[in-house]
Length: 368
Image (cartoon, rainbow, N blue to C red; front, side, top):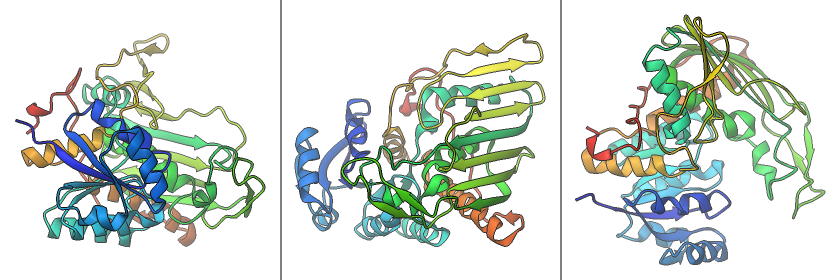
């Protein structure tokens, strides 16, 4: 019999709603408590999603019946809450990034390993039907050996639509730390780890004006780079190019493309779970859309958490792992470092490519 995990949620902001729907897709998850620094917000989400208890963060961490903490706080306290959860004897799964710097991420991983507890981290979109289809195409050699990749996320920032956008412009966020994890995690899941990076970064607008409610007219002081161009040397020999920007009004660049010796793969938005997926090989006269080979093409946030719980039960590695998230964190910080220092940065971290899911609807009982 599959053992469910009692999960306590810390941080009941916007992203918590889609996570709190996860038990309808993944019945191994049992949400038992919601906590937030705003207790009214915790009560509201608990009531809306039939979670039995709303409480303070301290009360949740002290609850002996909670097995896993789902950490949905703002980035600057991800590591702090994660360490507190591990100290309380609970595995932890966090929203991205793992921490705002390598030191935080490393401390979290070391604490988890010392107590034999799991550390997991978003994004888990690479487990969706779209990216898993791309992984299968690459594993099957459809476009040959990967030669290069491009990854582009360009826009003009969240201050026109987000209710409280200040944190997007502070260390641990910006376009690289906010959106980079989706793109880098997808690239690593498809092509493996990165060995070396370089890059350039800048702040274009030192001050931003909020035009969303309820903070319309408030000014934000920008304290992190907002336009970053990076080069990634993958361990498999492929070379990647990425741009992450909150300084661009419009563009016509793709999100992700993979270039191989026998063709090209167009990868869907890595911030989603579905398609479309397109491929064009040397034999093709035009692009062709590839039907998705895997399930979970709808919004399935929480699949990484569910996979971690299954992995705890079976003793295998989990896919959205702390090691993967730390490697992503290392890459992001190293690109900023490369810009500051004017050189390539050799990475000291490494991770395995996450095991692919089975085509169709994945059966976790078959994982070993």
